[in-house]
Amino acid sequence: MSEELEMNVGTQPLDAVMTEKGIKNNDLVAIAPPGFINHKQIQKGRKGRRLTMHMQQKILDTLNIYSAPESYEWEDLFTYRGKKDL
Image 1 (cartoon, helix red, strand yellow):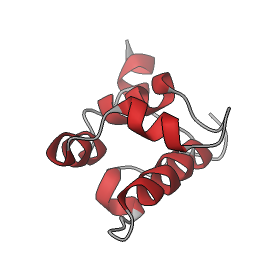
Image 2: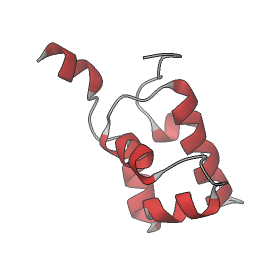
Image 3: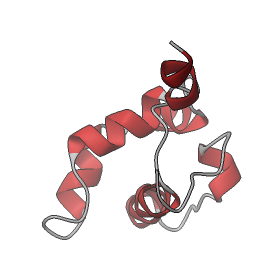
Image 4: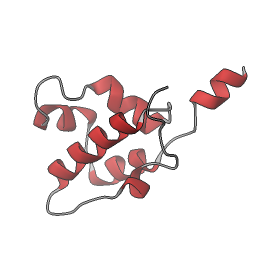
């Protein structure tokens, strides 16, 4: 049970940003280079499944490409800093 609590940090601000802007997971996957990011990774980020720093950065970069010229910072999307390796 305690491992589950560590891995789930609750719905992230990323979810609210994407919902407010009408951005779907598929929209981000479609603009990213093949194999860069997938639907499951974005969904995990939205729902608060703990991600690595690297994966958080990929989601941030992809959202910023999609939303240009508007841009977001790490703190706008996540309430925690991922570890280098889980």
